[in-house]
Length: 496
Image 1: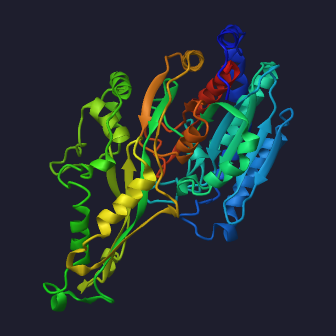
Image 2: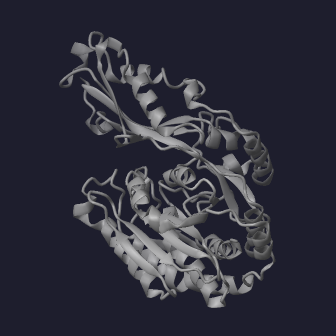
Image 3: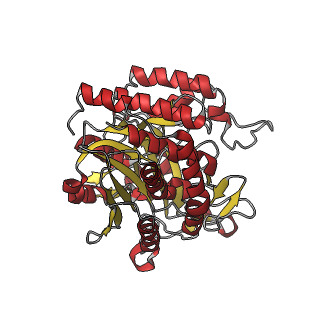
């Protein structure tokens, strides 16, 4: 992308902006009449990501939600829009749409991103709710995938349409909607390579797959963590043996696994031990965390669904300092065990020493740590010098040459974007822009940062407090989604 001249930037900032009230009116009607019904149908389809449905192609559910979204986009009749469902052999499909500029002389492009694949069901949905049973209640649309991130393609097109209906000039807009994000975007690099000649000069990336600190203002994501996930398995026997006969002689596979994990994590504090998994937190991000902590206060930790502790009171977090809470969940590595194999259900657990134990590990990495290198380091750490010469294996998720996902640290905001974001937040939320890091991972962002180093980034989303992406009772906060869509439109119009 060619950086805009000072004169061009000043002219863009001085140009008339879209009428905020008109944007809100159009976007609000679009959500009520078209987007919520489309998302209701989308939520009902269990279009699980390939990591959770190895037979996704045969089941056809990903193809169904892609076809539904593509048909919806084409029916909107946006002037000059061209849409293609792109399919590379052996990979999940993507939607690519291209809408020509309405601003004379504009050569830059706005890239809008989202995904349509979903996480699996999980348990614990409250009565009347379920992952594939959408329910609209008190401004919240419940069900898997609506907020993460099925709404993105619908909101993106609506934002473009809102500007065109007002006759507000804008740059060229392209959309990239993938279907392997929840599997670490394993197919996305191939599509970016294939589509790069058609993307053009990316001036602004609008990623709608992130979160919000509250529902009271526009939130800009400043960083994302990377991730290494995979299965750690310890095998000690070829079959289960009576525990009274074998215990004391045959080492427990669970104990060996626990011992191996002690190489990685201090179980008393949760701190990851290898220094290579850590990085220094930039001073700017620390200052932003302090400002965000001043806005959100104790809600940064109170918003989680804590269980009762040993004394009947609430379970306590690792820290109640709001600044440390924000930094812990965005700039420090952490380990979670998200699944287990080799353990029978409690009702079927006899007196048997089990032959193996397997854990699904999710290692979140700071934004500046390379995901692929961390994956290799983790495999070596866990597998080398196995206790008792047990068979210890760690199989990281991903494809050869692309194991792990690297995080992302946002580039410095250009003056025009900082001004546009603040103006959009005040116009549609009545409050200033908020800055927040996110603990999740969007692999696309590190890919685009490498491929388009001069592009500006508007990373945002509807996943605010208690929206619970990936878990039970996930919901999309529709009033926030309406305001975000209008804000995106206003920022697109301000792009030089």
